[in-house]
Length: 423
Image (cartoon, rainbow, N blue to C red):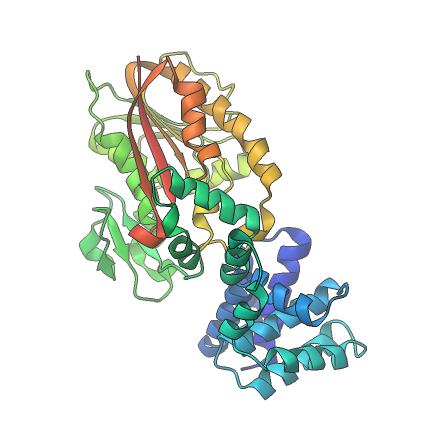
């Protein structure tokens, strides 16, 4: 593989570290800028995603071999080298020599000998042997954090989430599923596209889902035209759950309170159009509101607004169905966003809960009596899900149903939705 492919991977790691970049947005742009052929682009993609996904395990190995402070660029080169040695079909000599060449290019000659020595020692064991060595004597969750490359606090939070459904014994299956790259899933938006016209295999859970076997979804006509889009089946099922809940009388004013970037809003808007309903899609950030407009471009009767959902200008009791896809830690999408597990902190969780509670409280206020609301998160954390429902909904809404989907059970992101009816 070319040095350009490894250079792209290094640049993505550096941007994630220094600029809070998102891999799914930055990597395609860099691949295009470098004009890599399909083979090198595939190599760079696997090297980037795999290294970030397994970063915690590789750091444990590196720290065992080099118990001193490392400059961040040197550590990134070692992580990339470790992934090639332990998880890719790259010969040891090639993984080591190209890593040495990379560190010379991005840092200088001084750390080249050090990188060479550390990676040669990494190559002395396979990944399973390293994990067995490094987890000896560790407590259960600390050992799982090393074995499956998750921060310890995330392991504990996911265990709590499984405990809420009497499935804490499934923690290793869930952690393992987070390390498997998901296939691309499309949604055929009702009345705009059909499952039959999209390439791939029909989904197992959503009636509008198609799982792609490969290729660039942007090359599909229905996707370019906004009649279909990339959307996880779990996200599709959130919209379906809200629309399927009976409503009497079936009035027709719907609200998506936190609509950006627009995937759920577009599906909800298509379902609203089928039922003669009008959807208001609201987003607090102007640039994300523009993304919502782009997602909804194929739908005729959707109003996009830009307000803080807690303070928007709507009248109390003026909506019949409301979706609150609340801002959350995203712990349910770690397989899809490999950098998120290293970016999020327990402090983020504490900061988001008051916002989630305020949004749900406002949503219930905007709902008419007997109306229904779906509170959803792409996080299974009890703090962001059941605890919010219990704190805000008690006495003012009836909990009709709770649905959850899991990567290891359902092949979706870990999605949570609670359906409530206003008293």
